[in-house]
Image (cartoon, rainbow over all chains, first blue to last red):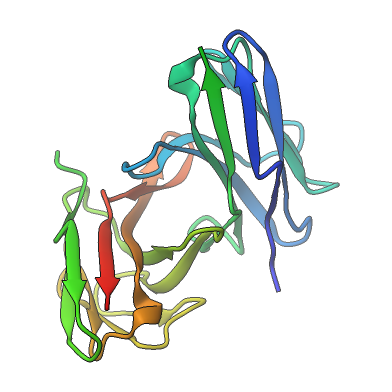
Length: 113
Length: 114
């Protein structure tokens, strides 16, 4: 059974803090690792797709790294802002470019002003 | 581009009633998906359609049927709704974006079965 684990489940930080969370996934049959940002009452919005071991992606204050050999990815947020409050989902794509996604349960981030 | 649209946004059903959730995408994507999202769970795949004319079961298909009406539309049907099907349902489509395939989600349908 393919399983994607995210930790922590939830995180409360103060505005200005930097934070990071983890996504663990199977290291076999890997094709891609996706990160999504999911605000309450909205639909998940794509942040990053990473395919190569050692990949690093950055969008503004948010960045992500990928280690396919050990099966983990980190998402970093530098200088958190209240508008960063959301659930961050990772998803593991296996079996090829159009293989299905297996989603983690997400990390819920709350940033207090 | 509207992207992925879903109707209805909210629905309340009584146990045993049937209904169809509609999904459409205007991005010319081949693949479409139905997920459900429950508290404390990740998004779980119900059914997917890799291309027009094909459908396949996902992780949690029991109690659901799907129809890929054409390339744009992928509907999800509950024939006899049960309280366990109370959930938020998301439709998604998948297409090539930049350097890889990406899934784009609809706004969701919040379904309550009493």
